[in-house]
Image (cartoon, rainbow, N blue to C red):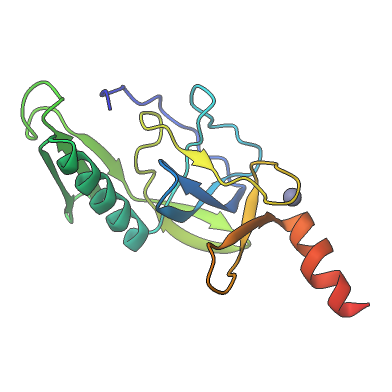
Length: 166
Ligand SMILES: [Zn+2]
């Protein structure tokens, strides 16, 4: 994970829900711009709420520690920002860490405080739909004794909502 200078963003007011992952597991619920205007080298640039941000940094730390990389991360209340550093970075956490400040976005008319953890430097992917294969899955369908399956809104409605109505 190299340190990449973030491009300043002009916030798009339109966001939608999405399901994102760095590796196959774990997956995280987040938000992304409706028209994907913030793709970075083809990778997703998702936003996450406070608790999800903590879970992500915890998972990334554990994964890096497992491969022998020393990690430090935290949350700074004064500037409402998460920070992350590992020993592949030059310098220490005081001189060279990634920071992600809290920002408000609007999703379905609701204001949500989000942090774009790893956006524009980590390789985030968006979950593929199990039925049509598009990378826009938003609905999680738990399956007893098996892994959850994920569907885009359109497939989800065709498969699980319309048949029940008809
Ligand atoms: Zn689909």
